[in-house]
Image 1 (cartoon, rainbow, N blue to C red):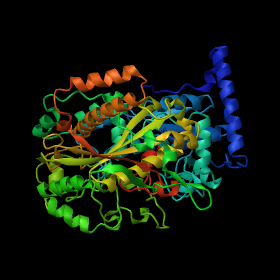
Image 2: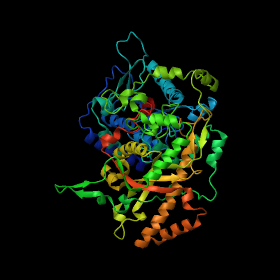
Image 3: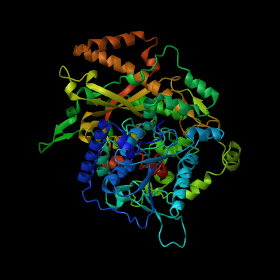
Image 4: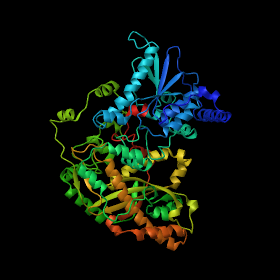
Length: 621
């Protein structure tokens, strides 16, 4: 992994071509920044502040701040600092190289990786309740570096009337009630807040200067470790498809019962290997007929959609079968009574990820629980006007990491608590609701109707045991995809035009997809799922969808005789199956999801939901 960013002070040693490339990029940056923020007047008193520093997380906001300050305040001697945990997205390094062309020299800290931390702690995995990764790999090295620099310029003295150092952070105007870590002897400022720079303006700058790293396009919503335990299920799926090697490395650190691991290694005889990236998915009416099919003229002659926003519109659904299977799951589950009790309390839905982060004793992934009863931060609930972010108590977090955590000490702490039962595996019939995003370019349409070749790409987005849980996850996914679309689709409008989110209800027969209740003998990164489970579930979904898509493709190509190679390939696939397709699972419903307005979607985004919101420290440094 690249550790150092080349300084622009070395520019005299590079080739004329490289010099010209740097010159053109800086010229572009000046044009973009001056056009986007013409009234920037933020300054720093250099007589007071002898040391100015800014954390870099690899994310959009901190990168945009570095670029803006480099253009607007080139006279400031700012030290930029990045903490490398060894598991950061590789996509951040090209961003740092572009910043280097603007004179942003980044000091990379970190002599220990996340895996070093785990191996040195007897295999103990960090979690939302014990963020040893944050304290040991982020706060501690950052604190030591900054403290030493402050001491070099005068240090901290209670008798001083003013501090000698200044910390700046890329927190925007629209998140101005959020705070980051502070240090003795250093004041803190947020230039984007004082200048009222919005998310829209930050994204304009970052997208035009290519400072949005490609991990966002791959499905991530925030910066930080690629395998963060705060990941939502849709980010977990994106991780599986985007970096299989690192996915399996994170999986190798989980400690699951041997019987469960063997179960996930066991695939029923005759089942085909999953197609992975090349999996084809069935096309609902939204794709085959197009979005105009769901429009009608109102009384005023205006065109309007007839499919409801933020809802699934089913082309067809065997609801009776889906409900029957779900009822059977609850009855077979040893915790069924607790789940049903929780369900009665349901008022407003929270995604399965929102619930799982709290590590509740009795819970059901996908069930809808009362947010007001379980939210870690009540002020994070939608509709509350109080600040949405909790200030970070750095000292408390840092000191807590100094305690040696061992399985024995954990047992002592939990002596008075209810001991979790061992992991239970239920072989039962199951129904999953699955969302897949198709990207369709209408200019590829042939023969007057859509065909599989019109879809230039697709991705498995999320799955959930309930339709309501699926919809909540989709809202957060859509919000991040839309606001960052200009980096991948040139504009948000084009993304909206090409994006089609299909929804499937899939029934899996008994013995195909086990239901697991993780107990005290399982140590995974997440309370209610494991890496092995996610990989196994994705492969099960891919088999069913690819088989159904092959059948649909053959039918469509018979009606519109094009792409003969694709049709012959689908026929060959179906003839190669050694089992009845229904034995792998069957699609019992297909439709599409229409996104809501951006404001509604944001309430369910990963950064707004307490359960999947990143640690604010990792978002800054």
